Image (cartoon, rainbow, N blue to C red):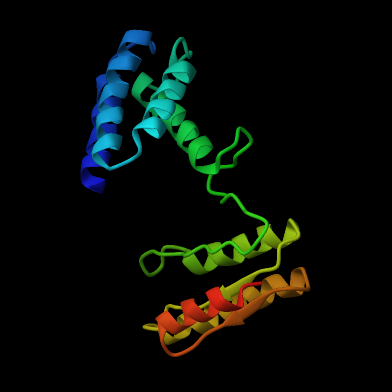
Length: 185
């Protein structure tokens, strides 16, 4: 599914390579590839239509930055539209999850060394600055040092901004996740 989605987006951006500016006709043509890819990925058709219409509206007549090709510029336009769609707001910040008033669960996944632990610390600090309490549940139990590293990062955040951070861990990842979900903050 992700391969087809990725190919659909790539195809759309390739359609714009070599163009001098972003025109209505080439944007609409490119968005047909995006529309097809999203529908094939089982995204609801109303969301797809709203998203594609928004991208077309944002892109038509958009001046291409001199250092970028139209396809590259379109990537930025599509990225901004995706962020707004996922975050459900005009003031959405890339990579910052939308928070509901109650507990919000964020699962960090990635390869070893990809920055999950550091990102957890940064996200904890970001949320604490905004008055949220934070609980981190270490579920990477294949690498013993991972739990210790996560605990150290959260303790550093706690030292800088006292109050509300917790770290929980058990011997089995599914129990860690269930406990964290049950306890909440």
